[in-house]
Image 1 (cartoon, rainbow, N blue to C red):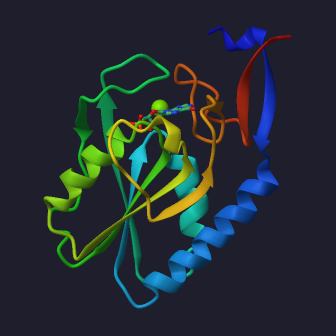
Image 2 (image 1 turned 180 degrees about the vertical axis):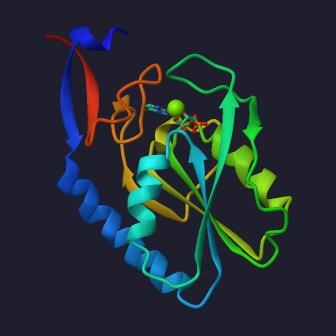
Length: 181
Ligand code: IMP
Ligand code: MG
């Protein structure tokens, strides 16, 4: 797929993203008001979403940490074999209510793997949040506790989502169509 030659279609512009992220932030605030929240953001896909979401969660006790995973597969598809490239940097998370953040649940191989990995560190509680959800693509059963938008099986780019590690900086989410421009 050479995306330079395809028509792009904006799916969620900056305003739509900020409106929904503010709603998610308020929902999360309600649930974690009096807790020690540890947000774990999966790199690189969720770094922009994380930056906006944590600023929408208005609670006093919130920490942010990051984790990098990789999966064997091609650029638009993850495979079932996920591994940790860089783990979180907090050894003891038993005092924290953890919220695991990713850009998208697609096949859900990544979230399934990371959920089990973090659960193995015995957090006080563990929930998940994704900006986008593609339920029709699942290879493993997974349902996130907080979902920004549920979408059809479309390839999306921008706002952290990459195509061959580029376009993450585009401030809105667009969809690459099959049409040539
Ligand atoms: P998984 O298939 O649920 O394990 O998703 C793994 C990763 O695939 C996500 O974290 C994204 O980085 C990437 N991914 C899935 N769908 C898309 C897409 O539509 N655009 C860009 N990246 C995607
Ligand atoms: Mg990716």
